[in-house]
Length: 447
Image 1 (cartoon, rainbow, N blue to C red):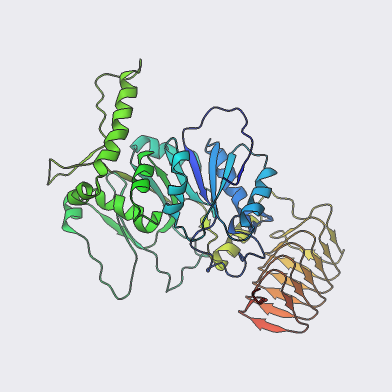
Image 2 (cartoon, one colour):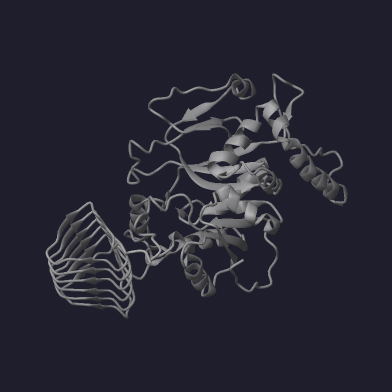
């Protein structure tokens, strides 16, 4: 354990949260999540750390206990802990640093002794308009082994041809996730007969994105702890649980029944001691197979598909930029220009942009569809559009910045013109540079 914020006295929440503070997409966020800049959880969206949105969502859900897992890369855990020390919200955070080589399920294995109830796992970079209580109420109603969230990507989120969305098979009668496979242009689509025997009515979707948010029964942590071959939640654990819904031999080989039975025995004992529970209600979390009627799977699933509002992740440069545009779009009730900022009279800051504290912008400059961080110095006649400018950035006169992400302490000299570039922390762009689609990083010799 790296850091634990003092706990305020409150009623224990029904679910425990595990926030993944940046896994599996560090290369896709290169170079903005490099060690010299900020860990993924601390990347600014609308000039506040992206994890702040996660904590707000959990607070709305009534979840007050969270374990934040972060990979031990450089001083990333210290940077995250420093932010959480100043966090004044209602979620009690326990930061745990884990080895950078661990997968998401392996990281859960590290904290298995800290999981003491049903738990929700979610990434630090998910921002959604979904009311968390709608999701939790659906989970309570269906009472599955696990619930997973999928969403339809917006038209601006843009999925590349080489990043195809998966095949997602859903039984619409019970909203169960019964099939998930990565799409490939070279492999044919196929399903096992045992799946179709168990779930004869399957709808397959190709336009759903996995939010990587899951709600698990507590006994799932026991499965993870016992099976070292489960390294990733999305690539190992979820496929195992999905297949266990209809593959009897897999359930027997993996010994899944014993984990669920132990949980059900505890539940049954609790109900037997209840003064309000009806004696006629049978405790049965199994799932009958109409073909093999003697097979009752101990695993059930529920898939929640969100289509009614914004939902997105910041796990690529493009999607991270989109989150910033969403957070600062017109109509969002935020302070666009703080009183500490100095913006020259003839400079235009659009009502789709935001300026950070103590930032100075000289005359005849313009900022459109952009986030500008704190303590920045921006010269005369500078044009900034569709960009994210982090803290302590210096931009010289007559520079043009379009579609860029510029990290902390970078310097852009006079008359530089940049389009669709990503600038690492501390990097200096030379005077009158003409750059397009570049990743600009200062390479240091190893000591």
